[in-house]
Length: 106
Length: 122
Image (cartoon, rainbow over all chains, first blue to last red; front, side, top):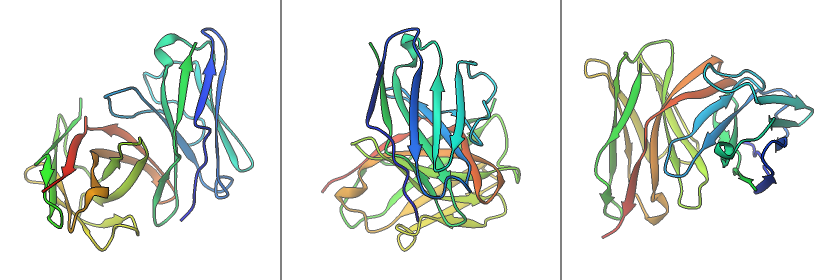
């Protein structure tokens, strides 16, 4: 198995850009995706295959990758973006989630 | 619009068996996806439990494999989770989810149920 590491928390002011990172040795070879989870709700997919955005997800959400790190970027953060964000990847035997990052909109 | 809904007991006795069902509505358990169970612990961490293909093939988290069985009933449009020999550490919100993929290394959960809390208590 493998591990994915995220910062526990990120804070940003409304209108600013939030960046949330996810690091893991397999990431250069394996795609990652991102989920947004608000309190009391199920996770929602916001990015898949490193940088693809599902239909219905605002364009301010984007994903990128560099080496062993994938990054979720939220441009022009809005109050409604305050949530927990999880990265996820897979190998042939398992699926792994990062520990989650709490995004606080100040 | 496809929706998933978990159902099952919210309380399970220690050393007992947790049994949950996920009902799929607005669509069918198709061969275009895998169908999965994920749990979330009180401290918020997410853990993949396993998944099943429409034809019955399964994949399990190696750390849980000895205690887990996932099955599918296409006639009822449901898939189910059994977790044996539960203990306090199995207390979590259990989600069912649909898996989209391009290959075995590129998988993501594109649709989730609301989740159901299962507590282990005597």
